[in-house]
Amino acid sequence: MKDIMRVKCLLSADIEMLINQQIKKEAHSSAIYLSMASWCNQNGYDFSSDYFFKQAEEERQHQLKFFKYVLDMGGNAVSPEITNVKGEYNSFREVFEEALDQEIAITQSIKNIAARCHKEQDYVTLEFLNWFFREQREEEYKARRALELFDVIGEEGTGRWQIDKHVGQISYDSEA
Amino acid sequence: MQETLSIPSIKFAEVFSTAEGAIYQSDSENCWYIDFAGKMARFDYRNLLKLKKAVYQIDIEGLLLNSDKTADVEILFICACDHCYVLSLLQIIKLKELLQGTFTMLELNHIIYDRLHRLAC
Image (cartoon, rainbow over all chains, first blue to last red; front, side, top):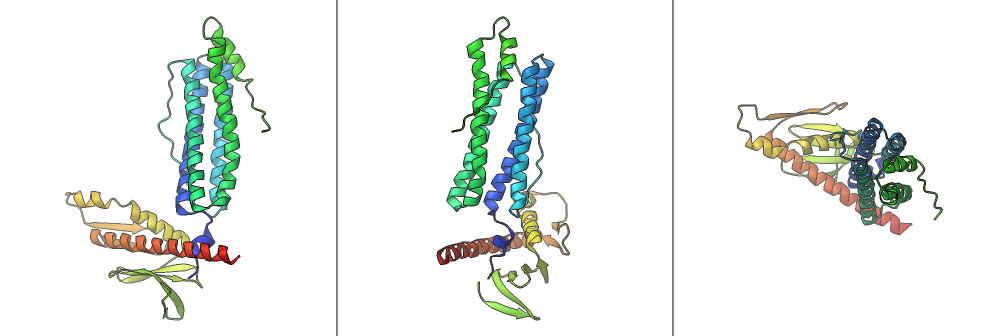
């Protein structure tokens, strides 16, 4: 008996489901960043607002990368429904704390897919995920550095203005 | 599983069967034939997955506990598929059992293929 399922699709049902969940998480993440950009803009933090606009766009690109991968491998990519996007923050600092939490959650989630790939010996998807692990190194670095500005500069006086100015300058250029 | 039977010039291999029905695979047509609820219906790869999703999504427990005066029937309609099923709750349970068995056997077939092909290379 032919293995028709394998002929039609490279991904197992479980991996396909996990990647579809990841597509939803990336879309959710993009929506949250957009919400953060809105909050920062309304509160006068222009550079931070731009920073979050860029992050929202990046998460959207990640979502599409996963989406196209599922389709390229013969699977069923599902366009997700996004709900539960927080719109209000108590402080400038809280925005960045949540941004870092967000990135950590995404890294953990991709690690979870990789663990499943190891179990199923799906080396093709594993290799595809490597790009995301490299990307997450940058994302977590940037989020962590931004949050550290609050401790290094301090929020007193014109502190927040300084922090906002420096957020846009954070970059990660490690070749390692 | 490898037992073949021939119905008007099409070769089938039985994937899984229960007392109420059976699912056969046709290698030459790359599709499956579902013998259930008094008819033989042809499903290709996409439609079989859509049927699986539709059946698995039915909240059987919810329907069992539902005491409303509604008809004990579910209509399974699959987009871009020629067939539709109108099933009673008991039939849904039987169809789900049939599909679960089928997907387990297809998974097993995949594992055997995977191991054999990789060792042969």
